[in-house]
Image (cartoon, rainbow, N blue to C red; front, side):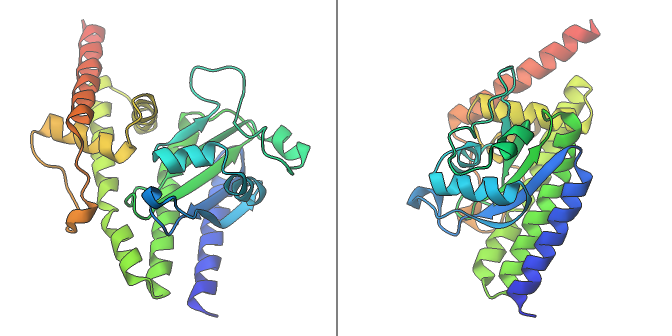
Length: 261
């Protein structure tokens, strides 16, 4: 068995575990682009199970759908979108799909890999229900396992530079965890609720999740967050993004004070 064949088997096993563990899951997939977003990217489905085996490639083929939104904007995309009740998943315009597949899927989440914009990944999960906090919690747990496994496979297959960059960027998983801890402490929420709050803020203000986490941690801590050694991989929030993080933190702490009062 070649390294690539072993890698595909490993990824499939992790996706099978995710499929069985996430409540209401109809399909899961891992997608990657080996070109940067700035160069247009060439995203493709690396491994997929269930309905993801048809829905992921269809969205890439037609250059349309929520998976493209997650890839282009580098933000977590949840469908149906929060605050809407029309059930639109953004999949109706895809041609060639069996109607029963679209009828089954009632919700979906797309999580861009937090390993640097130069080597983007998207983890997709399709559901028979609207995503809730438990689903977000489970996806937040399994996505790093699948994407880090992909990094190890690339390293073993000879793509050392690709894998090294991906593994370095896992440091931002820790920064995201720190940001979740800040939100939990500010509003008394549990971990899944804190992650959901960060994901919603990321979408609302159109800021990458890891960028928002860095800005928030640095605003509260008054010092640099943890960063990779490679300067090209370091996330540096813009002044506008730092101002947004400060406003979010002020809103979180103000609401907590009012509730205590």
